[in-house]
Image (cartoon, rainbow, N blue to C red):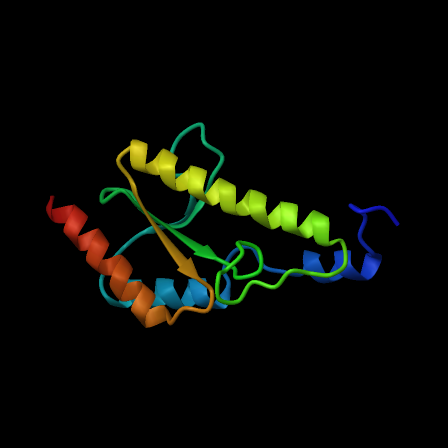
Length: 139
């Protein structure tokens, strides 16, 4: 098996990983909604840029991304697989670079990005998001 090939078992396991509507994402949305904030879900903040925010506050120009610890290389919880190590390291590093590029593109267009790790407390993350949204609405 070459460096970039995966086993059928690995492919099956990874294909079951949710990319949207994860537990933390739903918990954050629920808390934000209960706080009276309204938002869009899984929308592209910028036309022509194929990057989708998990939660989007259009008028306030705030884009929220809920990042998985494995997929985005969390400094606290990231694990580096031993099988196909080169492939996975490159994949995760590309994800990190894309996240930085996305935040920079949004900032240039006047948007604020919020990154929430999947291990974060949903209430704390929601408080941080709500404060930013409210501050940008007043401006």
